[in-house]
Length: 225
Image 1 (cartoon, helix red, strand yellow):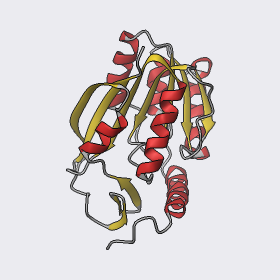
Image 2 (spheres, rainbow, N blue to C red):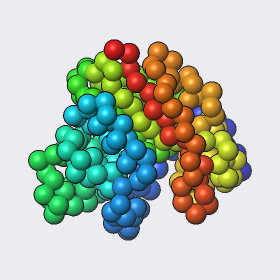
Image 3 (spheres, helix red, strand yellow):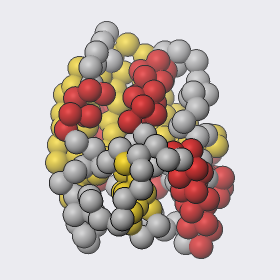
């Protein structure tokens, strides 16, 4: 089933926000306590680059944000789910990490709540491939570039058009497909390249995750110095 592109992108995003809020409420800590493989990689990349402050977009209940905090970074974890962030704060308190981590409820369709050139690194695991239009994704990456310092690093992951769920379920146009209640914007390689214009693109690494498995790219790019 396919809907007309652009019918109600704001309505879809708002519905997804409510869906994630309900999901975190029903399944606390749904992704477990261990950090994702991309977060482990990003922590090494950030450390090698001398980063100190890390902004995570779409932190959820915080397994990756907590990993960055344990590695000694000052972390700002954002998500549009207050429930997920409340779980993150509780876990950070239990683990004695509150001095290394702050949270902020934020919808990435809005400007980032940070001044220009204020962070060293940004991490986003499957955030850019949520129910965002191509225009909204471009605007978000422009915001990321604004808040990164010169030579700052962005590591993000996205599901791509080689994924088994691409073209399955309900189509919303703009390469967005909804399956099992979750809407995903599947990235073509051309979109990755377009988002890297004006950056230094250092890696587009393919990997699999989960039982399907999900097909993803891990992208690393740096702002000019």
